Image (cartoon, rainbow, N blue to C red; front, side, top):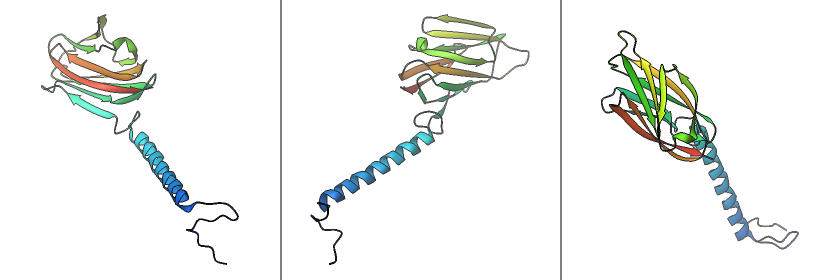
Length: 169
C-alpha cells in the first residue's frame, strides 16, 4: 500500500495535512523573522554597528560629532567631537539635553581645564595652545534610562548640532 504524504490520514496518527502545511509556513516565517532580528542586531540596529554609527556636522563645518544612534540602558556609548578653526584663548563645548540627569559621563579625553553645569547643560572649557586650529574630544557616556535622548552640542556658543539617540531597555 503506497501512502500519499500530502493527504490527511488517521492511522497510525491522526493528521490533518492542510493544518500541517499552515504550521510549516508559520515555522518558516518564524525562522525568517528570527534570522532577520539576528542580522539587524549584528548590523547595529540595537547597539554598536554600522546602522548605529552616525555623523552630524554644523553648518559652518567647525563642529562635527560621531555618535551612536542606538544603545542599551547602562551600556557604554562613544561620542567623538571634532573641532576646527579654533579661535581665541579658549574653546568651549556645551552639551545640552532635557535628559542630561540620566546620562553618566564615563570617560572624557582630554580633560577640560574648566567644567560646570547650568540647568540642562554641561559646559566644558579648554585653553587653546598657540597656533592650535583643531581638537578632538572623546566622550564615553552611559544612559541610565531607556527612551529617546535629544542632545545639542555647541562649540563656542556659535556652531551647533542637534541629534537624538534611542536607548533600548
